[in-house]
Image (cartoon, rainbow, N blue to C red; front, side, top):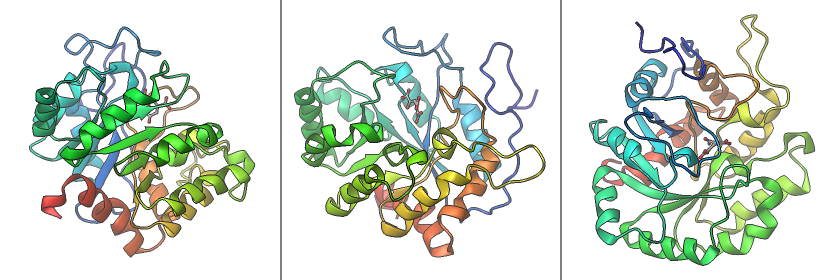
Length: 305
Ligand code: 0GY
């Protein structure tokens, strides 16, 4: 059975992803992806809001090689709560080719943080998307941020655009580098010149410690995937948003597949097509190298950069 072939009972993430037409630069990093379970080995969190497909480290690494990436940044998703065992297992079997972003609670010990660091964790994720998590008090999050700062870690934040005004003061008081997932989830129907997206650009402009992933067009798009007619320019309505962020802040952007695409209801993207989205948002070789190599290496493998 091919590593991409569907295992009975698994959620139908896109099987047999195409080969991208876009050739990734040497040393490219997929800076946002997940491993899920397998659930019988690494159980899902009781407090989870969804139960994902199992998506193993072997499948993730096969996808990495198939698409032409060299490294992964594996991000803890809410379905595993603050139990980072599946993430750590994947990092430890990556041969140094993966780094991680974990979720921790206030109760985490210094020894546990050190062990996560040794495994390759370089950040914590704070999730503010209401459909995904219950509320965590800001003082708990700030305490965690202060504790991970001496390790050289950063904070990844996930929120929806409509909530940025309310979260602004908290975000701008974080003491570390701050990485925003998926451009703060703009509502693309409002357009790239909307007040909402302008506020996000202001957030990045005024705060040099804020980075953004320009990923997940498949989540943000209203126009959706291409018809199955050989057309490879999918998710066109998201291009102006991601391109604006890449061109405005070329040294503070990251890109990732988001494999295996949890919670997508309408379609599962072909990861090869997602890679072909990149030259539309980063149109020059220099921008592509910053987005896919220089920036993630600086943040996650500074010693090798
Ligand atoms: C993503 C997006 C989602 C899920 C999570 O932690 C998670 O469960 O991040 C989502 O549902 O939008 O980046 O994986």
